[in-house]
Image 1: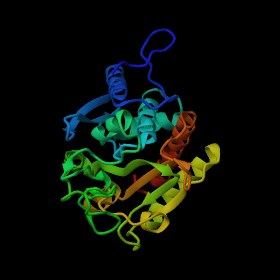
Image 2 (image 1 turned 30 degrees about the horizontal axis):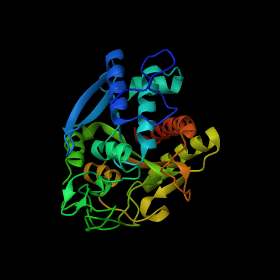
Image 3 (image 1 turned 90 degrees about the horizontal axis):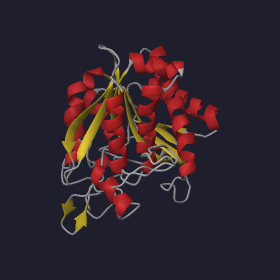
Image 4 (image 1 turned 135 degrees about the vertical axis):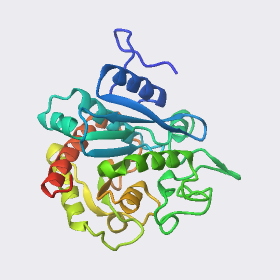
Length: 314
């Protein structure tokens, strides 16, 4: 695919439009080449053979770590726009708080967790959500119902034609299996797991399959509220914080709950970024909102890290 060109004829990657899979990968390659602290690992391949890439930003050994996963739902283009912005901020921002987090935290980031679906949403069906593996007469699994934690117990379907089809078994999708296999190698170092989605302006905590609170519910709420306050103080956007099953709807087999439940990653959240809940065509975020969204989410993450440290969780 031909990259977009700027007025000077050079290839352009920025956050004034939504970038394609090829454009994201080309930009990631350029950032890895330019930064001594950024490295790339291919953690697996998709059903159709595309690379599932993980970027690690690490300035020194022995740091605690944060893991981010985005675009597990194909149509949620704002999610990979957010994580590519975060990578760029870690590399180049002069903000003292970001520079401190870059130096003292290792970052593991999967910018496009569902590459086949993401490409399909760009080339064929804009609102495609699932992976692209074939199941009879239907295609795709909801990868965020495919993780092995209370799989198929709530808010998921056993109908392959459903948008919330959980797959024939946990980790039936090579995309989710790749994330799980890699995460198991680093989970002991991860202090915060963030799954970036759109839309609705939520900061969701475990659990999705039950309304029973986690054993650290108060700390999760405190960290989430710190993030929401910082987001509100940036552009006035209102995020709702709480357990997924209470403030949104029942879910099971999600990456967020799996990281918390299978690996005791005590701070595990789902960001549902702009626009606000109830918006029509919310997956079609206007490009002029990409940068404001990215700025406020970055501010939210800064505040969440600060509050987590105060609570002794990082």
